[in-house]
Length: 354
Ligand SMILES: *Cc1c(COP(=O)(O)O)cnc(C)c1O
Image (cartoon, rainbow, N blue to C red; front, side, top):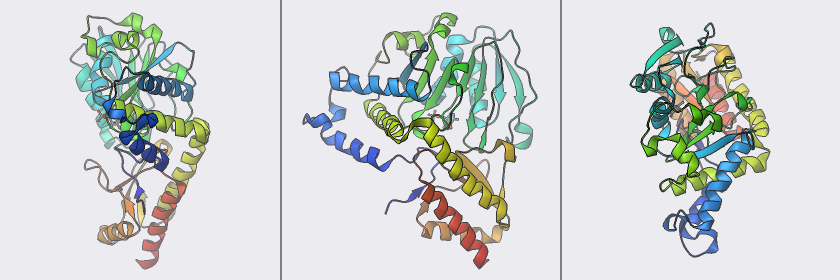
């Protein structure tokens, strides 16, 4: 039986997507060739990537609204530098909500001045700063919508008149937002969209006019937009599986449907964390992520017992990140509600036996 997979990333993917993907490895489109041994410029693959690009915009409600979707490589980590390389001419503003924001800030410093408008480092990133203003004279504002490691999530975004750039790696397609507020969104596929190996970039075409310096082709948004995400060989397998996952999501009813499911899953787990005296949440309640729930066990003597119980229950991937400790249950789109119920049942059982 498939394990209840709470892995923080690479993440759980839908069974039917995995099945289709494995078939395509052997025989794609009944053409007696593998998906990964045909030209990326062949009609069947162009159809795949175009469908993926369209579905991404559709799910974000950005189709025909002046945006382009790209499947790039190098992970979200390359976007840390690419955003700054293209758009940081003098000064940019960053909100620091964790490890990934900190890394984005480090890369951007290579290209210009940085203003950290606020940081939650003082409390090991267990909350989202709210009292800050974004200056009007910066090239852009950058934030991280969901902090995968700590389990915090931005529920609102600042009103600004500067371009808004957001790392949505770990909560893209998980909830509805007014995505037209954003000028550039990026997300490594492996958190909520597909396998590792491709990064989704959604960019407002107007933003391309703000490119501020000569940029090498592979790092230029303009080049990738002009070449329809085919400047070089895309990671065909990762793009294909991402497209299948986006299509699976559409079949379910899209982001509005999955948002409801995600809320149910998060409520089920957080309610138990709050109710069960053996457990304690790590981050401030109002900032809790619907994707990654972090918690500790109050009495550490019970830890090894709990660990063997959840392993026994066929649960996988809830060990906390080394910089936070405790436990982290990641509840990405493809994780079924019954998996969260299985974890909650183990938590209740521990309470009964302790
Ligand atoms: C995992 C993660 C990253 C890093 O992604 P890579 O694809 O490994 O470069 C960046 N930002 C967030 C929010 C993440 O969760």
